[in-house]
Length: 244
Image: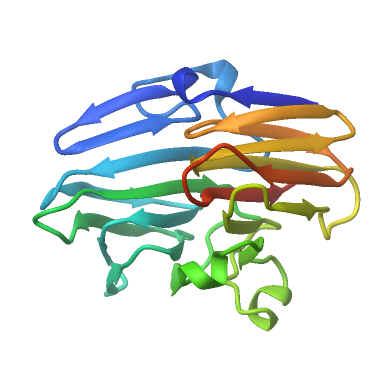
């Protein structure tokens, strides 16, 4: 099964200093027919204006993942972490029994664009935790780079871990370059592909589809994917989430 969500089909949320394109139901933009995909509850494509901040939020029993595409995002949380996230940075925040956090645009001159995702955890009321890592453009070029891997593989292969069977990959794929992907998990999995910038052709047993900037594909399959970058001035930037 394949469902494509185009950039235009997303809901737009405008707040003070923040523009967000929402892939799932969120806040006042309630859509009961689009509440989640597997264990993923939220996928927001955020652009925050220079010097602006996101209001403090309190969360329980969520795995919160942020990926900074451009600009500099400053993070604060009630565990005492203060971190500036540069482009290519991935942050995992385990809310567990409760955590407060706030994000700022660390620049007074340029926007910061970042993807924020929420996942249901495997266990509830755990100890809150924080981790992050930054990945260079060279590390992401023409490979499917694992930045979060479930189980012990996350630590062994240099990625981050979270309390859910979720694998997250990022890639900068040159035009006409092709990658293949098959889940390392047994059984049918849910795959979410999102294009930050550029154009991809995705092929699997269920068919072939085209994704452009801001488009996403929700795929339920156990087959191998072929991913081809095409028709873009420069590398196509994209993300793949493999989840139950």
